[in-house]
Image (cartoon, rainbow, N blue to C red):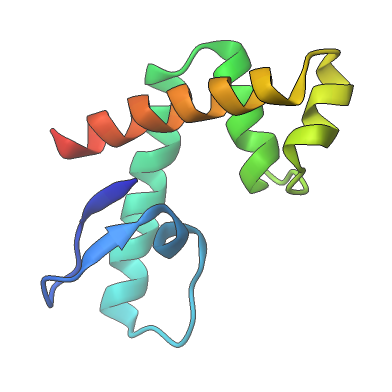
Amino acid sequence: MHFGQDKEGNEITFIDVIENGGMSVEDEIDLKLKVKKLYKKISEVLQDREKMIIEFRFGLNGREPKTQNEIAKMLGISRSYVSRIETKAIGKLSKEFEN
């Protein structure tokens, strides 16, 4: 999933938004704005189950990251169904950031 480009023209990915290592103040502010945009898009675009799975998978909103198997057991659904929901949700978010 791509969230745009940094000031040097490098693509910013989902992992870049989540991780932060040795950044300048400008880059850190830019990252925080992108994270804020990500959370807003998650709330606006995803259905409740999609949102919950993305939050659990990536440890968002203070949650511990969980595997697809752990989420499947929690929700009483198959791991492959969790994977399909996750893929669909990431696709929706990616599409929003392309616009």
